Length: 212
Image (cartoon, rainbow, N blue to C red; front, side, top):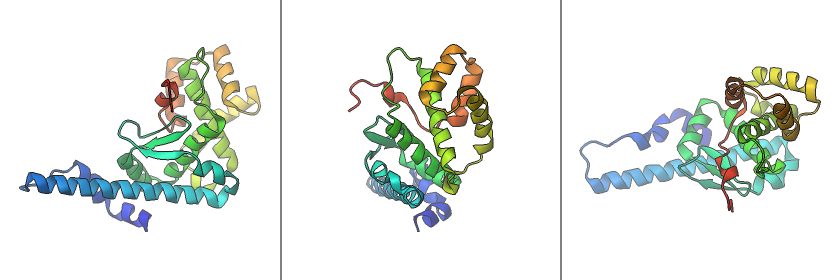
């Protein structure tokens, strides 16, 4: 039902950016608040739908899926500090409407950052290399699970990178990938391409002191 609303009612998502014509300021404010609450509720339901989808196939992740608290915010489309997962409702709903499997995969992506504790970064690490190394390691782990619900259009391109790295490193972990980049630094263009291909969330919260 939630999916049907989002897929057939794009006006619900787009409504926040529209200005009603010839209405009192009080009416406009009331409608804006009501629309914002409707969007927030739909986003919370999408998170639950994604969680249920993953639980069907990954029962062993029940505790992990329940642990991080999802917190609505306007700064990050998707981010985590290990304790909270931050999300922006409109971005979440648009993504769910565009390609549901990407939305499910991003849920698992950010959750695996928490499981692997990627946000606890050594001060001496190069942040750009660490960010990409963690994203590649997480996406590799998701691909290895072989879930239909997380298959996306990026899969084939990602697998080419996995194959190349595995020939050099064997089993892929964030630490092994990072140290590989430390020994053979990628160019800025290559790093940007990898970040685009494997990135799913904002890592800014990893580097904020007193993360909570």
